[in-house]
Image 1 (spheres, rainbow, N blue to C red):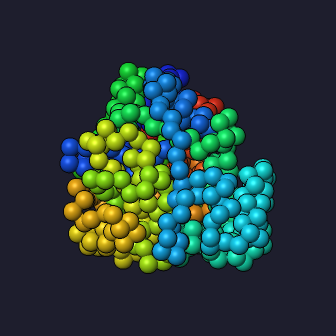
Image 2 (image 1 turned 45 degrees about the vertical axis):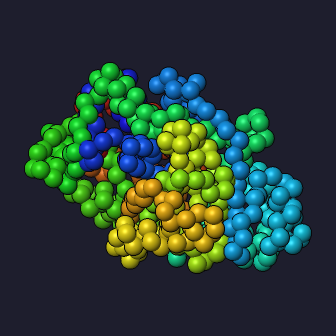
Image 3 (image 1 turned 90 degrees about the vertical axis):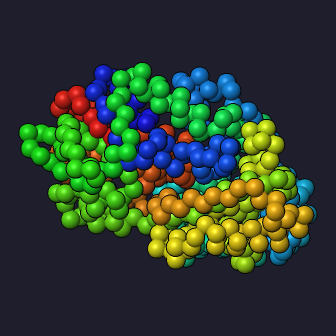
Length: 431
């Protein structure tokens, strides 16, 4: 959407094709009964300058509500607050030596600027060397497994560095507190405003158009065939879908291009949204190290967002990061609800199963491209060997982690590169 707007603003004739029946992709919204909010959890940081700049264009940045949030930690069957320095120093599972080394690791990582050298070492080796065995076994290893599952030992140190750097950037932005923000109405409102802005910019939006074949059709044009048999031709086509799908539908790529696209390893997600009668613990995020818990964190959105937007109830996200071929994708909503709610009740004894008002499950097999060793050197170029065809997706985020701000930053850079190319003609398609 950002890329389409930048191209249209420069006089290009742009058509945006969306496979789903709504805009937004992973940032779209859905309903929990009468409540409409984001399908996955998102938060705005004070330091998210690209997202905030876009929101300013949409006259929404001034409406952001900023809230000081708290962080929880669930380990050894106990829930702890880890929201400030004193709570960190009192954290029982770690000794004082491990705490000092953990704090030093985070501080050191926040000061690193040469991220490329971190691609040459595994995150596990780097964290163990810097923080010692205690902090690694009790903190880092469970968190890596929670985020990456069986791929935790494949990620480079650049992966964890990007997460630390983003959170520290938020604190460096001025208030030295964990201030998170949201737009009233969530991404449903943002996307509605953005869609209207694109139409006003002259972008032609076509929903429910899933591309199944993309190829050069001669005459300097690139053709797109859709699931329903319709065909469209453009001077330039930009594919923003995940790498394995792009490799599958593009005909005529070089063998090495297909290999690079298919070699990108992704994490998927099973993310449950639960609407509850009562709050859990009022931590925005609770990190979990206990392996018996079937989800990898608790995101209590209502610790950030005013509960009036949820009908006075609490909204909680329960993410489970898994590999794309994980058998958990085959579990029904009822099976997942039973497992997840039982775990919640065990973690929060004041919660009763009947407090769950609504429960929905989102499943996405390709969400996060894993920053493996020497990742940037093996990533395919955005401009393919097929004239006029470009593949640009979140796998091209090199020195950051997957979030809306980084995605918009990527689009801004890609837009500048596309506009600097020789103007073969004026028609663009983004799919």
